[in-house]
Structure formats: C-alpha cells, structure tokens
Length: 237
View: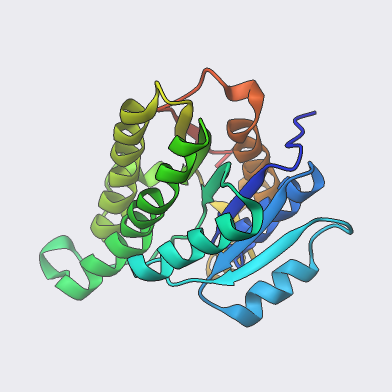
C-alpha cells in the first residue's frame, strides 16, 4: 500500500469527477489535501465527500490567471509549510469544427484549459519544491494526444502539448528530486460521458478510481525512478 504520510497534495479540478475521486484516494492514504477549482460551492461539496479524518483545505482558484495561482500556492505554503505533490487534474474536452473552421476563441479555450493551466501551476509550485528538495507533478493528457481525430484538432493538439510540456519539465528537474509524469486516459466513466454516449459499452471505459490509483502510484515512493513518462490508461476501450 502506498502511504503518503502527511504529504501536502494539491488537486486541481477537484470539484470534478476525477479530481474529487483522486482527492478521496489521496486522503485515504494519509495526505493533507488541498482542493482547488474555480467553483467554491462545488469545492465544498467535494470536500464533504472526503473520508472522515482527512485534513483538507479548499481554495477557489482561476488557473488561467497566474496571480490567482500564485496566491493559491502562497496560501498552501503559509498553512502547511510546503507543497509536496500537485495533480493537475483540471482540463476538459469540446468537440470542435474542422481545423480550418476553428476560431481563435475555440482554439485558445482548449489550449488554456488543458495546457496553460499546467504552465501556471508549474511556475507557482516548482520553486517551492526546489527549496524543499523535491516533489511530484502529475499531469493529465489523453489517448487523443497520440492520434489526431477529425473535429478534435484543438483538443488533440492541447493534449499532445501536455505530453511535451511534461517531458520538458521532467528533463529540467530530474536532478532536483522533482518527478514529472502524465497519464493518458481512454474514455473515462463519468456521468457526463454516459449521458453523451448512452449506447456505448460503459463497462469498457476507465473508472475514475482506476485513474486515481495510477496517479497515486506516480506520487508515491514506488515511482521514485519514474519521470518524463506518458502512461496509457485505456481500459478496454
């Protein structure tokens, strides 16, 4: 069993399905959990779902504004003294038009949500990890990063950028005890996906609990020699 022994873990996108599941899994393993999202009410609802006895904090944060991210990181350090782990769960998907019909607004939305958010959190937390001698960063890419799909150009490109950003961060900090990895989920079994794809075989999709277990591994001592990896988690889909 991978115990986290009071390590301070930031979970972005903590109000969502995967984020809240990951927060619960980390809390059950002894982490002090910081739930970060843009919606305070949903954050508080996610906090209530944590196992009894988990030490937790909620911080409403706009990941697309560096000042908001910096203020979040400063608040975490002020309360706990450090940041050991960040799981960058925040992100999203929208089906788009064909690439040549994609507007700047549609392109920027995917790049901001899936890449800029990680860029901002990296700038905020890495100096803290450097000062404290190490840390773990896990990002969420997607299977779609490996193969472009029609009418998904902006999404596929943004998730491919997550892989490259992960590899660059890993290369820059591998001698500082900061491991940076990402996972590539297949179709995640969430209420929204079930609603949008009611005729699919949901049993073949990836449960949020399975993804959270992989994230947990990448943040544990068991993964101490793993950095720069892009790990497929496709289930049977």
